[in-house]
Image 1 (cartoon, rainbow, N blue to C red):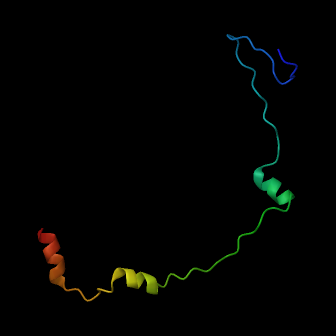
Image 2: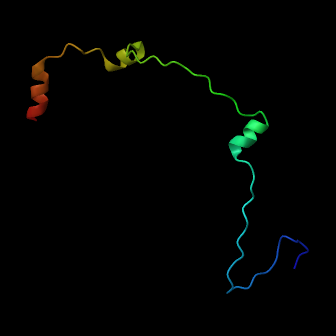
Image 3: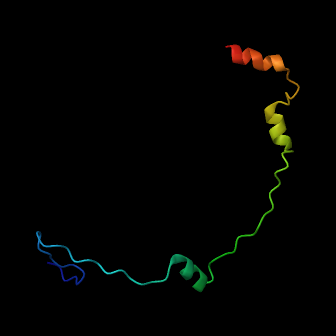
Length: 75
């Protein structure tokens, strides 16, 4: 075998040794400790519904009549 101390042989039919967990800091803690965590800037979103691009895409057909719905329901 190689001279690598990380490699060793286990018996095939024996239960495997459990690898212990490392008690390291979480990713968030690491980012804070290394000054790599950037605060998100709050942004006020405008939900007024008056978007000119959306109005152009919709075609501006807001003056429909009730019988348009009846034709769709009959088919």
